[in-house]
Length: 257
Image: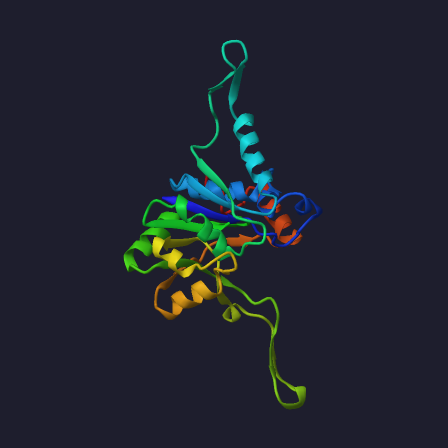
């Protein structure tokens, strides 16, 4: 089962660091957020990854090359034929394909560009800048049970502001501080897609979260898997700091490995 990771957009620039490296390579707990996402999948036995790179894509390729060298014992044999011999490899059992899907390509276009690397009927997909404690095997089983083209993971996001009921001439008729009942389900990524999804992706300008998902929903081909556990994206410096604090305290819900 292939896992597609969207890691190519310019996205939000959460720190000065993201000016010279893509956000998925921003570190939390000493390792890139992208690595944390991959470890989640690997925990459940999914070890083949296709990374849709774009913005500063060479940085992602360099990171994996250095990671392999850093976590392995290497002999450089320049005497008997310039051979490189790897001893006691300590890296995860991953097969990683990094694809340059373009700097300006939209999310749907990125998925379209890696179509040639998908050799099965089903693949998994998520974003490279958020972590979750979802049971990925349960997610896959749910997808296989309903027979639709796409499954997305829905999480509940509580409203951060108070609720207003505004009447005529701007008069506030009702005010209530935020409560859990104001929570709304949102798309957390962590999707399972059948190969028919490529029929919904036109070109580099296709935004996956707009036309394709809207059309799938209209056709009854989009299902949601409700996740009631932890999920957190990393769009701001505050969110990065919160993830760092969870790791430092030993209370990082997504770290099952």
